Length: 463
RNA sequence: GCCGCCAUCGUCUAACGGUUAGGACGACUGAUUCUCAUUCAGUAAAUCGGAGUUCGAUUCUCCGUGGUGGUACCA
Image 1 (spheres, rainbow, N blue to C red):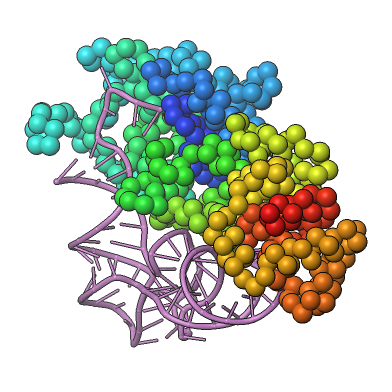
Image 2: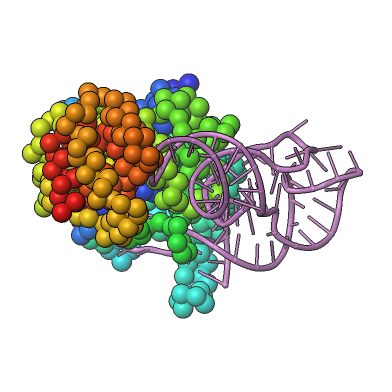
């Protein structure tokens, strides 16, 4: 059995989106599962719509998701294999020789300045009501596709079709098939939207005298609101967006694995190595899946919680560094590294995404932090808050700040002494120190902020 | 219009032709916690409709309906 060779073939004509990412992921998973080769091929034959920026976005997004390719652009001098170049814009000569082959063996002809692929069979004219014109049909047996996910699919292709435009540019169907032949691709894993194209492709393989590779058409990702498949314009469609918002790439990948595939048991959150071990094409679902950003957010939080603290602080720092113009981010980055790390360690178990961080930690990095009016009203309207602030301020200088338990003990002792609860002091202290009623433990806040600043803020709130 | 694919809780999905149709997200209730979040316990929530095959159908077949994709000198 020869080595599996799969390819992901995006075209740099738009932002890299979630559907493309999953197609790439499933190809990558299959390659890694089988010990095969994962090829990245750039389908940039559409000169009008291509852009270098979109191309770079593909590279960056793939790298961010951890989908490394074995052959393709940016891999060594020859693209890591003997089948380059891996950008279709550089493969004109290859297409020409293949087209010449078809012309030579009578399977292609010129008409209206374009080159057409010729179907073999009885030809007849028929008026097409829908297209309002007479077309030439060809009587050919249905194409049979043995799809690894869908089983046997039959489809009739009954008209000749263009393979080279009159401007000399080859069309998608041609270059796609030629490259898959030339690059020895063994399995074509792509979106179900290509299933209808497959009959054309199978005819082309036959025209070239080559046995078609195995096909596996994976289900589509549907937009979460409204009808239709996810497209670049939809909310949450862009990979770049998740990167910008500080999502954990492992979480996004894990989530994507579960859209159309499952390990066969109840596990959902699982290391990618385990997915690689279990992934197989026949296990992929046949039905389209609707995108669910709530579940993705949950997955993201789960990954965030278990991230090693050093890794979390590193990712938090990276996120802050990308928040141009954000005052909190600027102050956070200017802060002492150990202090920054301490704040992040306090925040990690409490937040659902790193994008919450600037709002969540602002008061650690500046004395100018917003005070929630509602919370202030509520906390300051209960009992005698001024007295409690005073008592806290008096107790603070002698308090043991060496550890969270020590601080907690001191606060509890204070409460007991005055016949009140821990919560009564916690709430005013929290308001004074952070301006709100949500946040890390009060003891952690005290310890990290330090005695002096806590005292100053207590005084400030007391007026 | 024509052609293809698909069909289990709101969503993602399990279930050799025999299960009280399971899990997860979300929702709701409660417990835990210094706030919040987490965590934990619990509740509600599904086999698209109709024929057939079978002792027995979520599972197989057909029809319908719905969803989805294609139908270009786009990729």
